[in-house]
Image 1 (cartoon, rainbow, N blue to C red):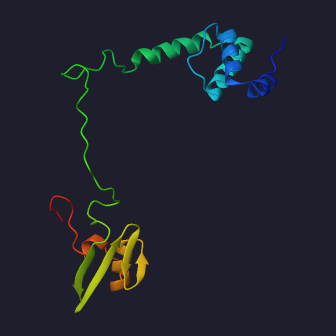
Image 2 (image 1 turned 60 degrees about the horizontal axis):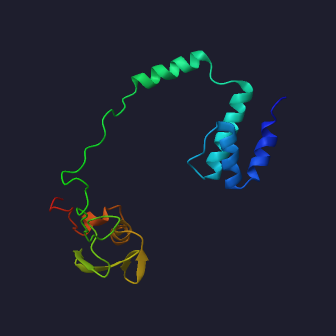
Image 3 (image 1 turned 90 degrees about the vertical axis):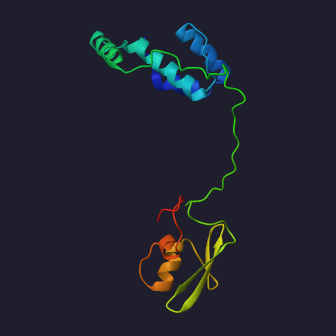
Length: 165
């Protein structure tokens, strides 16, 4: 009797996870460790097709074994922490999340003198305010001020963490 895989898939798509687990046990001869519907459907379909059309050829099996033997696999378990269970070493650190670590906190006003004018840019949570307009980046602000392409952090003198420029 020929297997109609499309028909079997349609039937399995209507099955509950419990029914799929029972079908898996019937097809594989063991209980599944997963209750994920998609995984169960794929594995059952694969096994049904393999049973109907035949499994891997002997040549394919040999090649798979060669590849497995050549693979760099971990042969020892990871080491345990020195105190035994690793408990009690959780460290909580407060950090601020920012697209750039050079940017100051929202609410900060950046000032710079440029061509005899004192420029002030306010840092917002989602952009920068300059002369009543909101810009998405400091680079856009610097470009609006100078009329040419500038790195915004460089233009406003914001240094990289650690004092390097």
